Length: 68
Image (tube, one colour):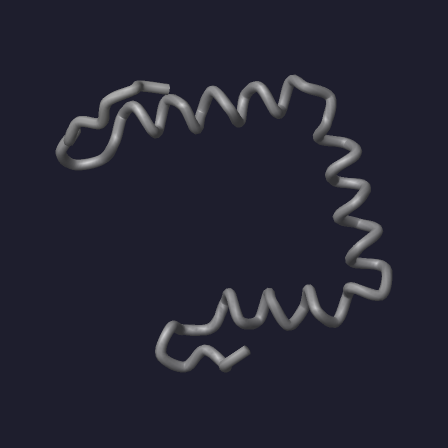
């Protein structure tokens, strides 16, 4: 990561590159399947209602979003 920040104008190519590199590293790390399994377990378990509520809030329009 750069030690100094500079304005890159429209968009931030440095941040985009770092994000893409991190996503590629995660995809190749072997951690995807365990993370997916944990998410499925959460959806099938006691967290289901909370996760559905969070999904509804996330999909709601900003001004009409329910208050938490």
